[in-house]
Image (tube, rainbow, N blue to C red; front, side):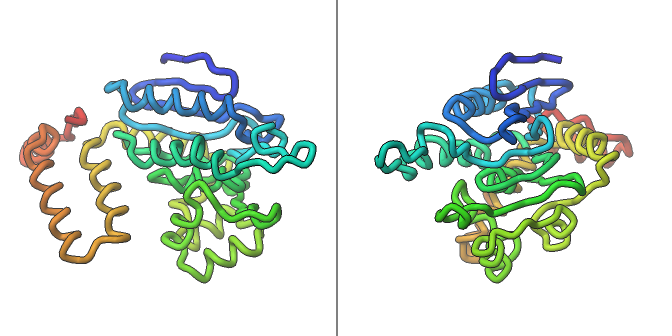
Length: 267
């Protein structure tokens, strides 16, 4: 296991699985400028280190992440001066979501507690979202006069439809993990005592899977939101051509014919 030292996150790599844990438990893992920098650095490591085959995002303590720390000077209203929240989004939250969306490995959000505001959006940016049954999701933006950001207005309607997305955004009601799973917002809600083992099992399954195929699947699913059927069929053809030339496809076919478990390398 490798452990890289940061102040506001914990970042470890074990057996091909990287775990990035938001680590400001006294502030419910809310974001400050330093945390953004450290998260970006950790994601860069995941992108560059070829031995990493899957990423788990989670939180330390009783929260997953509650979004922006409103006490951070970058967003405070100080002596009548108005903060430029658009700059904060462009400089910090947009790059974070784009890094997650374009990561070369599959991602799991392991939502251990409340995921609120941008924290909920960050979870939804991952490929799989698994939550402890005690966890919850809150689109808290309207409570402070804002809109869902960090991709929230993109993820919510796609996951649960416009009616439920609008209700979550306008009312800012707490959504339990079990209801989130029932609505299709997340993959599953898991009993708290089985949560850690379930996340570990999923992460190791993804890390042993054909990485390129999983990432191309993510890209194709996202592209479908704006593609015509004709465009999507062409994209599928292009990805299938590429993957058909991969070492993992050759291994998968050989393992199927040989009636043995495949040994994928992400190549």
